[in-house]
Length: 193
Image (cartoon, rainbow, N blue to C red; front, side, top):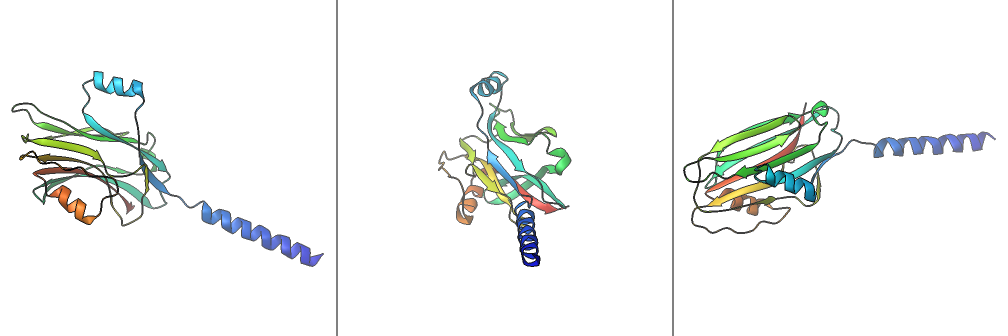
């Protein structure tokens, strides 16, 4: 009887330890496709060209989610804006979006970032030429401490030469993005609280 009791206790302890290990908090970001009705609503409200994302999971204890907008011109970082540092309280909505509303003529371009914390618009001097934008992640990416993830880009080329960028870019492709006349990048990273 004692052997069966010890065996049952050992199995229960193993199950408990496995459950504890598998319940570790994980935070990921995935691309978000708009429904047809949402697309119509955005278009009819004068919406910009946007990329949409949703934050999944829970923040690991003692960490925050930092979102940064980097503006590069011809390979040089010219500004770095942090529209949000999110803790669990600010992740109620979990939807974020990023895009550019292009100015026409002498009007500035407007960089737009929105989240549950509100809408932020940054003015950028307009550049003439070709532009392109897109997501830089596949459907989902798990965030790891110390490993920033570039989520989306907006590039402008005054000489009209633009190449496409796929998901999951490497360091060489990231450098190529930053080398455009203007590159605006949306970056996410986990940080210590």
